[in-house]
Amino acid sequence: MVSLKTLTEKLDLKVALSESELATAIQSLSSLDSAGEGEISFLSSKKYRRVLSATKASAVLVTGEDAELCPEGCIALVVDDPYLAFAKISHYFATESKIAPVIHPSAIIDSEASLGENVSVGPYAVIEKGAVIADGVIIGAHCFIGEQASVGRHSRLHHRVTLAHHCVVGENCQIFSGAVIGSDGFGYAPTETGWYPIAQIGRTVIGDRVEIGANTTIDRGAIDDTVIESDVIIDNQIMIGHNVKVGSKTVVVAQVGIAGSTEIGKNCTIGGQSGFAGHLKIADGSFFAGQSMVTKGTTQAGYYASGIPAQDGNEWRKMVARIRQLEKMNERLKALEERTKED
Image (cartoon, rainbow, N blue to C red; front, top):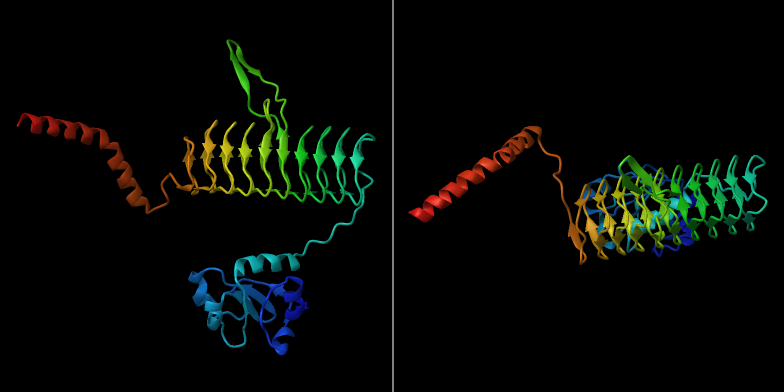
């Protein structure tokens, strides 16, 4: 439990409150519709204004124009960006315990690996020959760090992360459970008897302040490196092929697939379940809606989309039936055009 005064000071929130309001006790963070006494919430979208007017939260983060919608007994914390303020507060109420810098006795660490100061290594983690682990790094249980791989200062690999040989993770990164960084890319040469594997001799290089979600895989390069630049956010269950480059501050949402040698620009947003063909170049600032099928590159920033959103089942069947008739309709149209020319 914490007072609003302590909370706003620790998070550097510039709000004007009375002494009695500053003394209000806050015990948790909650959504507008489920919050109760002793809880704090936020409003970042105008479509939830009606929920704000009925909330039972003790305090709500709002903009100045929405402050008057707070019901009686609810303290309006007026900020420029309620969503950013909520993001800051969320860390204060996170329930995960702080991890002490301890090397678990069951961890297997090669004598030629290098560990910095205040490093934590969880149970049954494996760190191979020549790996370099910088100061303040947290290696979770059952992680695998391959030969000559490196992890930068204050990065964290949650449990069961694989970082393959010679791959690089920068500083202040978060890699979540089950992610595989530096697996072999999908490369084979065709022969008369089948497929001959191509050795993947590049690396995967991750910049600083990158987040990689659970069960995401990023292949190592075939020859050149696969590169994820700094400040990129990659969601869960994403597949990034060999030699892909992802520009800084790009966001990739769940279940996206990016085929080999595609270059994604900076400050892009890629919606969930989108698929990218290989060897494309995507311009900085490109925004792709969910389930986009991207077969051509982009040359300028903008909004891109493809696919058909969900709709009424009967309407969808009618539409499909019409699509099947398009060829016959096209033939009839050509015949009419020919008759018109003759007339």
